[in-house]
Length: 246
Image (cartoon, rainbow, N blue to C red; front, side):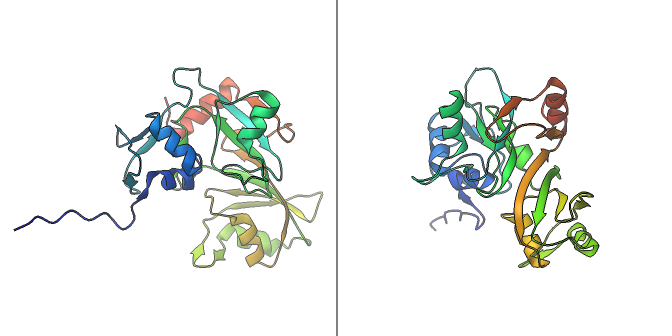
């Protein structure tokens, strides 16, 4: 009797799509990393077209090889793309190269084109998976301005969780700005696509501006659009500890 070929799990996806969805890089850029032998699945080098599931351990090696690891806090301005720009768009990678001659770091995660604020840039592949792990509960804080004065009940609903389509968001922290009735700070431990805009819209508000001001223990501080700074030793220590990196 002929043996049956094991079927591929229904939740398996191509590794370039998997990492692109995680915000590591575009699919084409992931393919380049695979060709360089910098992507690993369960400890083994990935191959082009390989499929992975959520139970697989996918890691990305250092993009700069043996070069010194860098950890930067960067202010992404409005209108700048995180990954995979069209011909008419500008992404973080192109902006860094043009303005600073920097080519050996990449942004971890995403931030919408119309949003602005803090991104972590690095060439240390160990950071990607733990920082983007949706179950890790890492805090990200945003300054949000909406189109009309905020009710106290609105903030309470945000904190309890809001149903957006078939998903209910996880509990959050919402704090009103005492100087501006249109502004509040929202801290999330997850990052669904356009989540804050969708949460506000579900409760009858439209987001006017959205700025990420903190990722875990790293704050945007006094940075201006397209400026960056190196993480301080204390920031790196706390950042690595929270991510489980030694």
